[in-house]
Image 1: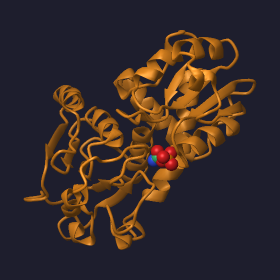
Image 2 (image 1 turned 90 degrees about the vertical axis):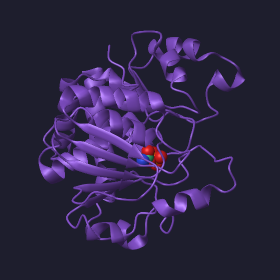
Image 3 (image 1 turned 90 degrees about the horizontal axis):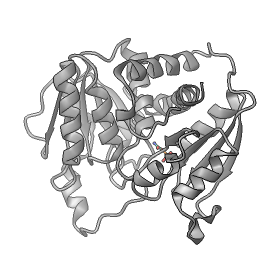
Image 4 (image 1 turned 135 degrees about the horizontal axis):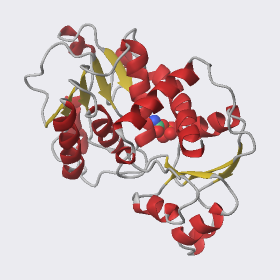
Length: 302
Ligand code: CP
């Protein structure tokens, strides 16, 4: 029984196998293999890509889907997450869930031990986003080892998953430039540093945009207002303003591709010319959300 609640649930081999399987799905070279299976999707927060990726991916693999909205289950009247997971595990084969907060809720759903639970984004981590990101990079470069990626923006759940994923690849370098006060949680940085020490990758974080190295292979940003969160500091926009991704970054990294997990706000975290320009892989990255969702469903249900 395999859950995917954190990237840390995956061995290095499993991570590589999932990326390879995602690429196979992107190439259309996988036959439907989940006929007769039933996948539940439970999204407590808004989602366009992840929800559609898992729903369309499950249907394409031959599974059937039950979709629960944020108010649909008795969780809202006080039933516990553990009881909910236990009940669902007797009726469906996997649960894909975007929680209203902590990863703890997903662990409670998974407590029953027989129905896989897949994290479709929690406050701490967005592991299936990282799989789509790696698939996009691998498709473009043919490898992930030795890639140098500049990540500009909040150290949010996309950033934590990306750090845990990239740090598994030999020679990879990820440079996080996060606004002061909005960095990666220390525990995730430590975990990524631990991976990097083992693999030969490097992960660094700074809270300014000064002295950027040259020659990145990819520049990645995320929206300033991470889904389902708000910023209590009324002055947060001025803290984020220097971290906008503009075409100027390509003066020193002319061959870099641009990544964005979407949804985007043109004119905030990225200018329109970059998001819509020739270096942008953001919309291909969104397509890979479905290919990686298919790989995850097969891995959990296979
Ligand atoms: N990138 C991402 O998770 O998009 P959604 O919030 O639309 O699922």
